[in-house]
Image 1 (cartoon, rainbow, N blue to C red):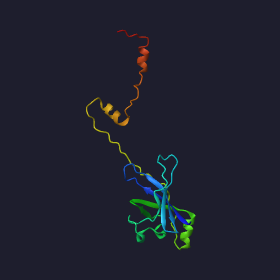
Image 2: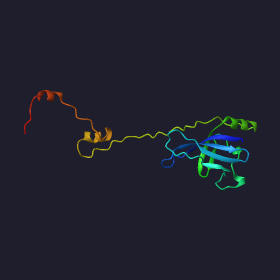
Image 3: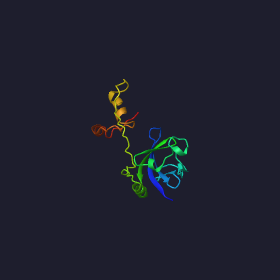
Image 4: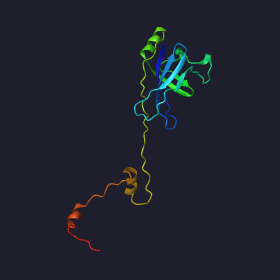
Amino acid sequence: TDSLCFHVLWDDRERLYGDIQYFLLFYYLADDTVEIMRTNAKNDGRDTFPKLLKRSKLPKNGRVSDSDCYTWKDLAIGQTVSVFGRTMLIARSDPFTRQYYLSNGVTLRDDMPLQVAEKKIEVKRVIPPYNGFGTEEDSLRSCTGGLNQPPPKKDLQKMRDKNGVILRF
């Protein structure tokens, strides 16, 4: 059976512990149904489940009705697809899909990169004011150097002078 294949991604980073997940969207031309399968990366720490959506019609608004379902004309690179509350971005297509769209007079955009750039968070360190406990150097050390302080430096002159001295208590 002829099917159009798209690589889609779901960016769920707005939620707590959310991340980017990658899926394959198959659109079957024979009966206008959609099937969505997850692409499993090696050692990604997720359970492998075969399908996000079994082969069925995909409604645009969440309610199943034949008049308001996705068709092949709605699917294009750069467009978003709503899969029961999950907004998925269509990023790539396979060669058969591109040929099918060209034969119907529609040109698809170039493939988008699947890896989304991570947003770097800039952390600015602010040194708190001296609180009166210990010395000011101790307070700075707790903010900048970490909790494990380096061992004190050895006084070589003192070691030479006190060499051979036996302490008796």
